[in-house]
Length: 212
Image (cartoon, rainbow, N blue to C red):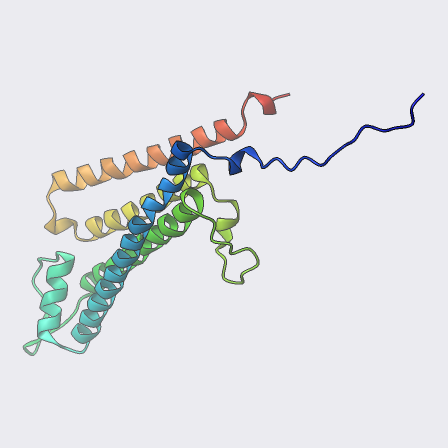
């Protein structure tokens, strides 16, 4: 009876993922074509920063009695009612200030949506950002995937739509009834779509294998 044991030479065969064929390698590395798209969204974020500060400066100048800034502000928020005057000087009213502030909040929420798309999309579809342990890592990035990203985007769109709808209701006297109705219907459509996406994601994450 032989005491020899089988020669168990370590298998140094590279994993299947490291032996990509030419076509598979081209397909896999084509994800980097999305990089210019995300860079473009970063530039769009910069445009929103400029827009935010422009509107804010107009609001501050109008509060200090700058007639030209007030006219620009009224035009940007779509307020058509007569501007109150005190001794010939233009004066802001509460409605104009509220519409201007809601416009600023709208810009911030769209900017948040851009950040979700840029950071979450890059992390999910292009490459890891390797932010583990970084003190400024977004909390939602820990468990982000395509399904979670869709739900978060749908929720952000509902928030943006809510701001637009609130602005419309505040300035309802200057807006046609059909516009009011259609904006309400579109907002409800966004809401139902988000609920459908969340419900579908829940069904997919709790499939038949999870049932007992």
